[in-house]
Length: 200
Image 1 (tube, rainbow, N blue to C red):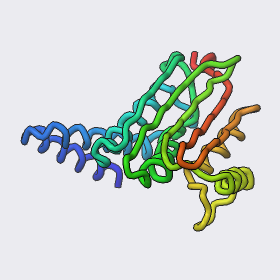
Image 2 (image 1 turned 180 degrees about the horizontal axis):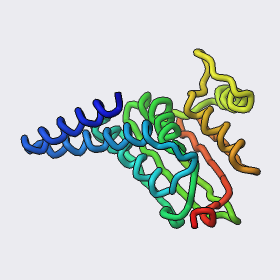
Image 3 (image 1 turned 45 degrees about the vertical axis):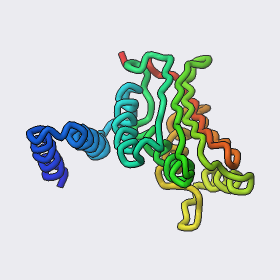
């Protein structure tokens, strides 16, 4: 029951505030934002600013969880309030980078999110300096995405597969590419049409 969940989180957040537990309160607020976004966002596309807010809340929780082993940086050089992108674009990609790239690395690492405008397209790069993949795993992951295969022993998460499918369905010429090198890291590059004109 979403209402019970939100109300409970608000109560816990209020108690944390009364007790002066500022970090706990901030974590509860971030978690509440994530739940609300995932459960109550019917739009197929949202502003880039809204997606970036969600990924900031998500990464705040991960930074708390990993105790500084994982950090992130966002480098956005476009108008995030006007640019529209598919809903739930960032979190599955970032989550994938943490689970498969950074968490297995003893020293952790960093995630870089970079957004640029290129010839009428919005290009999004999510890069990590985690454990990476060898060529065999990389080719297998690309093949699973192309063939829309998600198996228990596969490399493709439901979230990653969902983004790949939606990018190709929603945008003519839309692309999602994955590059990786073992012990160096992984890069996911998404390019979609710049549809900010549809926002007016």
